[in-house]
Image (cartoon, rainbow over all chains, first blue to last red; front, side):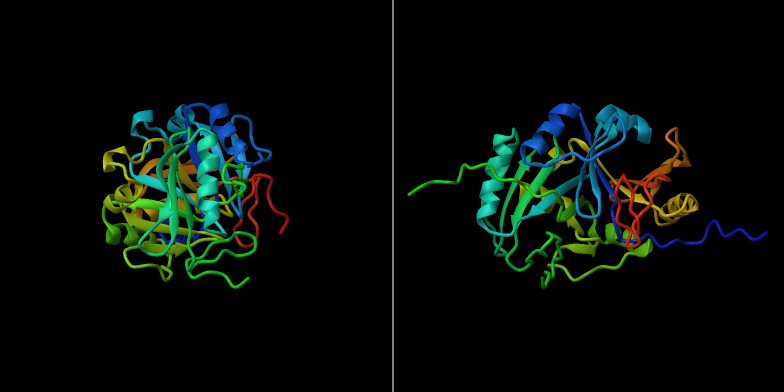
Length: 153
Length: 153
């Protein structure tokens, strides 16, 4: 019998689920809800928000560590940020203010950057770092989809 | 003149860009390329892969820290994982093997879990943690899009 198990598989270029390990589920969820996000149905013990073609899930930090099989203090190595691109320049400051009002800590206030965009960074109450960005060279698709090369429609 | 700048803005439910802060750009990029991913055009100093409706970018850890305005050692607080859901059970072990062959460290080998799915976790050479998962209750859309409630097509 031939064993094909070691063949190299191509991994499709997509992320199904972004999981944020959070210290307090309801505190974490309240932040995103205050920004206007709406929960979708999800398994018990998970709070989930449907994004475009993927889902962002909140999951207890301890449970995530147990799920992976690492001590909590070994999670979060490496740095990862989530960027939310806006349709207009004005929205960057507006969303930064909305995030601050919802309990975020501003790490870098909204402002122009050398490449011609406008960005700001905040740390959500759950500890994760978000960027709010307007990139004049990468207009969003009507449904909000992002490509660095931009969208036509 | 009325000042509307403090009005609460609704943030649309989407992530434009997932940015991985990485110690070595070419080492990090080689890993994803070995899994079959193809770079798209991107600004100088960034390696980017187009996903569904969003982009995953690799960016030097030190530059990301500088961009945010935090010391490198303060990045990565909080835990975040990226999940890649598969179309079949068999693909979970296959993609875990492909990732290991590409230089990843297996944290949890592919196996069935209590809720009826099959999952595995690996740490990419860039330090970030990925889950490969098959969820029999959430079939993917034809284009790979994910919803916990599944897709019809």
